[in-house]
View 1: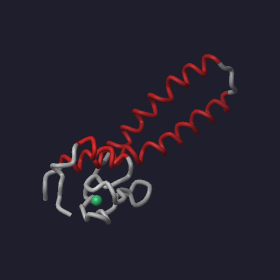
View 2: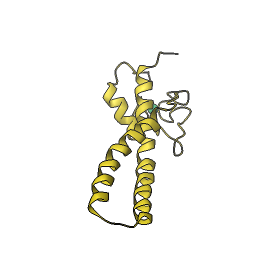
View 3: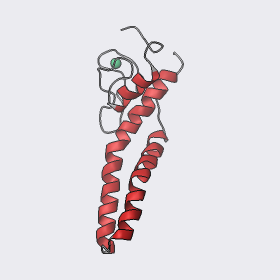
Length: 121
Ligand SMILES: [Zn+2]
């Protein structure tokens, strides 16, 4: 398949990455395991393993989870008198679940952006 990096719109590349799909063709898988990108797309052969998202995905995940959880924690903590062990179990457990769900999507988002913007080899 011919490289169509200039044809794929930025939002399409981002949404394909978020959906764990190759930003180039939108068909092949992007992540081979939880966070490891495939070396190259199984469908179109686009090289994806050299794109390094580095600290971007954890930064975005913390930003999103913090903005979701902190207002809930502050309002619930003021309105309830849960024992501290119960509150910590619920909030930390919820934070871990949210982070586990959002982190691979954030990585796909960053790989989509970096794929769209990188220079041709
Ligand atoms: Zn592909």
